[in-house]
Amino acid sequence: MLKKVKNKKVKRDILRNKEFIKQATPEQIGDFLSDPELVLEDYMDSLGISKKSTDFNGSLIKLGKTKGFLEKEFKPKNEKERLSGIAKLTELVEQAQFTLKRLEAQKGTLPGAENIEVGTNELTTTTN
Image (cartoon, rainbow, N blue to C red; front, side, top):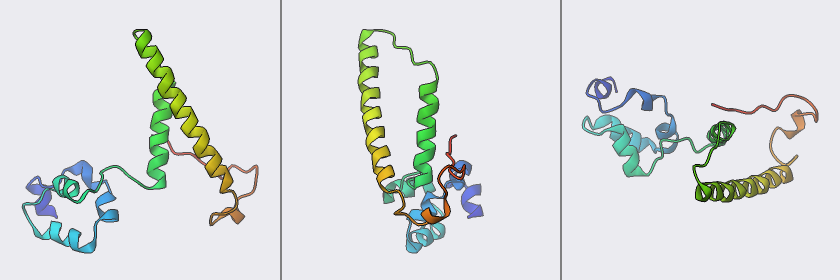
């Protein structure tokens, strides 16, 4: 692996990304490590492995980024952009309401539910 880094077959930032390890089979990991010419990003693309996290925490991070974007100034330049913004935000709100209802419907059905008391601050959100 160190040779791959030295030969620029692996970028430093992708080493922090655990998606290849999470999603690749042991054979695919072995193939990557044994072939000195394979570039990790290209190999992930060929396998259809996304560099972005697909787990629940990854979804929370994306949600935090969306929230951060919406908190900034959102200024359309013309009427068409304003109307497009309204349509997209309406769609986003509808999807958020649907997802909220689905999550609320799961109350008490997931592992660990018995350990969380109503009204405590054991629930946290992740933003980046």
